[in-house]
Amino acid sequence: MGDTGRRTTSRPRQEPTPMPRLALYTLAVCLLSVAAAVVSFVQGSWLGIVWVLLAGLSSNMTWYYARKAKVEKAARAAASSPGERGTSVTR
Image (cartoon, rainbow, N blue to C red):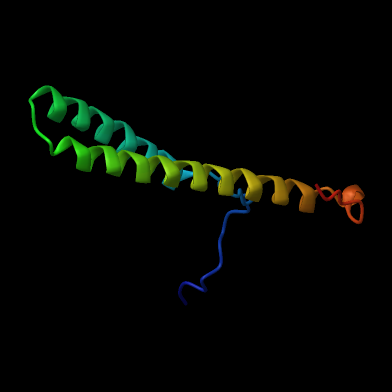
């Protein structure tokens, strides 16, 4: 007499593709802060130093999150291939 909570359609479930969103956001912040630093220095303001520091911080965060996503992707690929288990190479 009502909804049982079950799905009526049988569609295969798709896993979302992983995307390093934080890396993209920090890249955008880095580019915008570099532009703001250039504008500040052109206008003669020393406030551009703060923008340069923010650009440095966000570029490091971009590198970190992009590298993290790459490592996680490689780990998922290694876990999904059953023939490769037990043959790990350490560098």
